[in-house]
Length: 466
Ligand code: NAI
Image (cartoon, protein in one colour):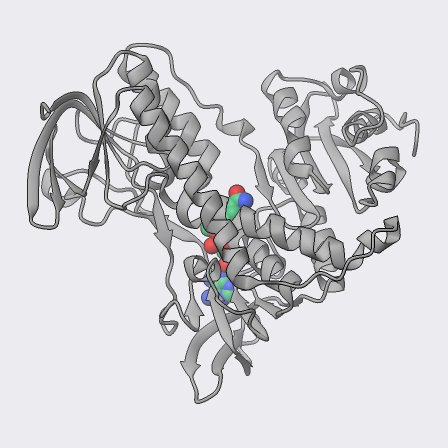
């Protein structure tokens, strides 16, 4: 095998593997370097895919316990945690195998080992005692992110865990305290709550999911409380100490600095993630980071060093797999002389709890801050025929459109299947739709999507079923 390529991609998460495939489609000889034994990065191995496997399975369990009998289906479900974890592992394998297949199909050379960039066109790869050097005209860094840490909270992945440990607990803990009510906390907290844990969240902000539309976040918090989860807001965790039979958690109130103590069997820390650049040798080649320790890139994803590009969680922006994928395709096209772009105004976000929250575009707070006048259209799922027969009537669709032009600025959905429903909203924003465009579009009956049309009609108080 030659050690010379047109492009080398470092990291095989959604940003890196998609970038490698697009480079190969564009005619480049491509090598991808991955230090883990499986391809797919955080998303496939310890992120999106395993968490969604657990969310799906625990949702079915909860429904079979609480909802099936309403439809005349009588079952007595129980949880076999070993089998549940096996199911999760099988889902990871089926997805990572898919990437191996795509690499072979696209003639992408995969190299197992840790990459260190030693010049603008060469990379040293270490795998145990083996060290090899590879050269390329372009190097793309797609090494992702790792979890943030809090001083005073030492993760051992047994009792004090990160989200990685939170995907593999071998028994359902009686109590689970989660530091941070963000994306990871809410999703994994939902899993273990459904399986029987008493889940308590400690959140520094005075609301959950701080970047989500306030009304949606507050609505969700109330529902999760009804489901038995507890939220301690406006409070920070100072430290976690291991005592004989439990963990002691020291809390401090963010407003008045009053202190309190809680105990729990397990503590999971989910307080955000930071770019992962360890061992890449960025210092020695003089590659610049910004003030948030992201790799600094220009509009073409070019770093401060010629021929070296960066995408995904290591650069600025939301740490989302689909954002990284978009950047992977864009940088590959730019490198190959084509037009590549990412529309950062139209990147959806989804939190896969029950009900789901999905958003695209601006929130009401954004619009107020930017002094943009807007109209609101809202439609509750309780008035949607399909939601009724599915027995999934919680939540609503909210459309925010410009007061003057009617152009849609943002769409926010809380409800069952919001993550799939947001697809239409993303397309609407990408095409610059007005709420009237959505309202005039025929939506199939009976589907949840009719709620989008109704919310669009409601922007001008013309909803039919409200
Ligand atoms: P996050 O940024 O979503 O939430 C972290 C939370 O921790 C914030 O609410 C913050 O106020 C709180 N916090 C920080 N320090 C604290 C302290 N000392 N005490 C109490 N609370 C504290 O980060 P998270 O949940 O760790 O997720 C990391 C990233 O992973 C997210 O930015 C997201 O982009 C990505 N992700 C995406 C998912 C999806 O798309 N469905 C699912 C899971 C993760």
